[in-house]
Image (tube, one colour):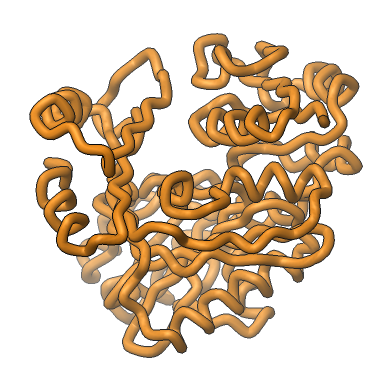
Length: 360
């Protein structure tokens, strides 16, 4: 048994903690919110800011190993306690900066959209084709910190703050969005098959497995994700989001943590992404996950809560698994939970999808 410290007490930390408890570990959680999802499951809870060096030191002294549940963790703090963080800090430093992230992917030989850095207003007028995406280099998630520039009028109207770092990216007209989730152990790397995703306004709404991509596309995508984890010498679960355009796989971004799109592995695989993450960071022997169900996951956003209760009351079903995160405040577009539909019967699964697809 190990004592595991989790930096961050949100839903990913909660599901990490649940997996860790199942494996017999103790959990220490650090989060500034003393009503966060992890409070009730933690053996020890430290209420402090994520970048509070003394608080992180207090956690480190109690733990055999540390992990972070979100990619905006303070990379400098992680570096100070690097011997306790198997994920390392390089993955944080790169994934927190969109320009560095794209350069890293391209250096690995992965296909990316065309991109360049915007350092001042004059750089905006290097944009010669539309539509183009402009994004902040740092601290963007769930569609935040980005603008779609459809034409020269949009370009003239955009107001960016300088000094500041932005990236311009070619807009990719893709056929499908996929993610590949890998787990790198000390003795090797394993991968789940690609998950097919649907985003709306930058927020993941639905994930499905198996995806309908070709075997060749799946192979290329899995190899790309493994190459990222290995280049970073990363330990734990890491996710890579990609676009599929015909037979091409185009890198979008990676997240050095378990990923929303793979929540359905809790019911659809013999080992979930959270099981693998905990096993990897606690130096267990590599284990290959096997998919045991087809599945679809829908995120439950704030506006869906009443709808989910209504659907579940009207259509209880053994193939429907509802996960609530225990967040105290319900807000529009806030992730309050998720529902997974799992079955090897495709007809049954399609009927469940029609019944459970969330409203806007």
